[in-house]
Length: 216
Image 1 (cartoon, rainbow, N blue to C red):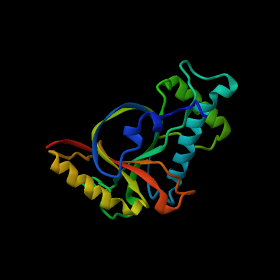
Image 2: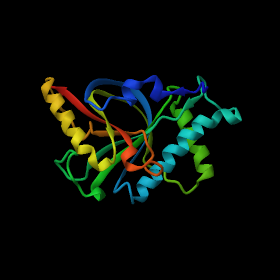
Image 3: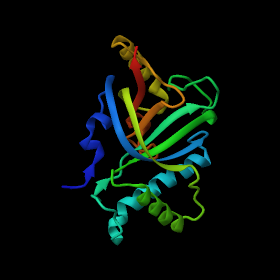
């Protein structure tokens, strides 16, 4: 039996919602983030972002192997990939329901980090990754503390392109409970990926969809 800390299991309210909408207050968390634009299926920026996020996350996780683990370190499972999405057209805030040209996507990809990951730990991990992959682009990579706040969320099962049906359920739920959508340039359409599309059949994918809300 594994004794590694698993964020998905310890924080089921954040990572394992039901397939029906629910309202949640999302607390402050630490993330490594990478900003970019373009179609995630074909964009070189997105490919670089994946290499950066997993490269840094596993450099920090595996620091125990050479005795360079930071103060407060504990063994853990690297949390799932997440993404914040909008589109590059002024005045349009992407809500996941619109059919858009994926080349217009503007995204922030990110992976949660344990609380012991400080700026110093982050910079050391960047140095380690650059020694292994000197060609990698870290120019838009950041360590951030982010509080998402009040949101509605749902577990989506199946291909990403079928998300609009569940988002419609979320929108209806929000209105019925006295809230309204608060998607804007700062608070964006949020997805948490619990399945790897490279290894999982589309119908078996699980994705947490989360939208920011406020009282109506």
